[in-house]
Length: 464
Image (tube, rainbow, N blue to C red; front, top):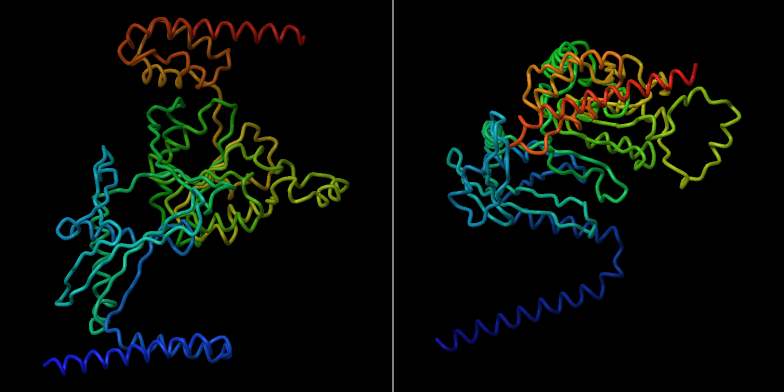
């Protein structure tokens, strides 16, 4: 018995020594072998390894390649596994999601990194493993790409590829209906390791609280809902499923609040595009390619973001000066690049998208940028009207009527004041003293309107 054991140990030693010798020789001769031969050896080694391994692995990543565009299959798999993770996984991750009815939030669980969940489908046993691709650098905003790996025996190849994966996606999407992801606000930056970085979008704005004429408000809502339900129409007429809105008016008239209300109505993400952080047209196209569907792309103060005002009206004498500008003098996004971003071929890379421009000076913009077809709706947000004031009074002071309303209505017909200024005046000190704040706030508003009216009359008299 001892002799037999000794022979086994002796053979193992000889085998180990032979392997070490081969590895040593391989390291010595490898640098002198032709690259073609090394490539061929690597291919045969990989084929041999795959032939000996009876299991197949399929990875589904959270984001497509290095882009920030979420992979829809990943979200479906995550939802599918959430119902099975509680039974097997020892470590779970929790995330706040919006309830299906849009009212309130709840925790949704998913398996943590390196955890495994087993599943069975028509007799085939499979395994899901959660993983994560580590950052290659320490850039603050660079994404960590999560993924799920499906492992199964090669004998189930046809069943998994033809039936099981479809089953997972179908069931996962049904589960997604019970766990709506929270909306996100994306922005681009020079300092971001990826094209976009994001935070949770949690803005309370809605159309009922907008200081806007009721007819205009209802018209915008109907237009948005019609767009959301018009996929078949856009497909039939051969147009990209997108719509452009130009919001213009003085500062403080509610352009940003309207955008937030639009996002909440449609339950879309917002992409806040900062053009001054874009180096050239190529990067602009890359950012566009990374934008998902069901989103609102916003460029605020379009006339200030880049030198696009009257770009086609400049004299020829200014061309040499412009062409001699160094790259460090400013961004190199051109008007044609921006136009292609809005309605060129690259604009159709994902559907159900709204593009919004805001400006304080619409008359200074290049007509090509805002023509009908690019900006489908031109919405003027002007000074506060009496109808808008009543919305603010109802929102801030819980008032439907008051004796001072008549005076305020008369003054507003003669005086320009923005909804932001009115809201600031009506804002109560706390939610506990709204009733006590109503009378002083309205009186303060009357005085502010009278003062503005007097200042405007005085300025008009000086000019005359």
